[in-house]
Image (tube, rainbow, N blue to C red; front, side, top):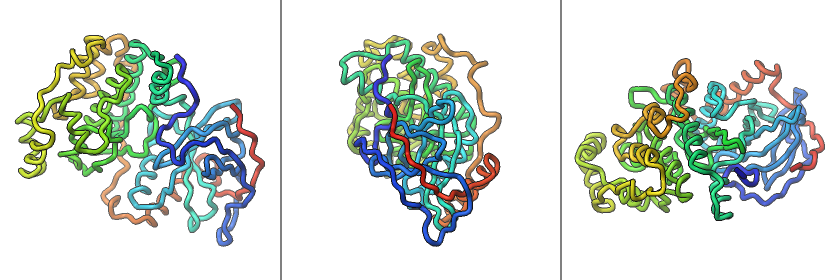
Length: 417
């Protein structure tokens, strides 16, 4: 399998243009005194300035999105890592809260199909001038989206049915662990899945992930990229959805792997809903009653009028070229009612997964993660900045003994390929 070029994020901010340079300005401001000794290399990549620990050698720009920009570096003994600079982490309390969640979750998670946390740091020298947060993780390969895009460019398949089955198995294996820890990823899509030439899969980007309790936490509606969002997230249950939202995303990804086309490429919410019901059918009376109970009679009327009435299509005809057991799994993943949608554990036991399913090799978390508290929504940007600063300080004290930097500028090695 030829995964193509080494870039792993599709929504680039800013767009990749290959510009790489160095700066020689000291990033310490006049009122932020320098007290420590960790040197950083300051480089500009695609108009974004990075402060990279001097023990790392810059290799490549990987990409970015609304929440961060990522570069590839090489550490000692040739180990390849990904360095993510969070984009404006303190522009709002919501964004700062998500940064904190990602920092905490990555430190708690330990699974071979999930991104490996290595380090977190800031080059800022004092809390009063604190504005930069970096996360270092293991480099996991190219994105699955790149593989799919490469197939379109070449007009030929790079992944076969066996690859697809193994990819989806590993994704389900990762989700089994996450869901056992009460974690919902909330942003599963091909660009957030990395793959190696050996077809080993890694789930990336926990910027939108969060923990949930079993008593109906309020959640955010527009978190998953629209094309992979479940109908309850977009329309009628957008404050108390559960892990089944991730399951819908798995169905969208599995279908895309077989067809090499996005399953529901809606340009806005109404079009997205129409695409969904044309394949999966309109909500039945049982689901409509739940929608009314969870929301209001008015919401039921809105849903009933959106897109008219559609019967569910025969998946055996829509996916006629796919293995029969894969089609059956798709039928169970892409169910409008989350209560009747298959779970991750049920998916792993499905006949389509029989070649790989091995319960003894599908670890779960030792205990549920709990990083939320009742004060989260009341905290200000200043509150979150203080919390994140002390989290970085705690981590650094435990791992290196010092947090702050003197921002010594070190000449940047030329990027290598």
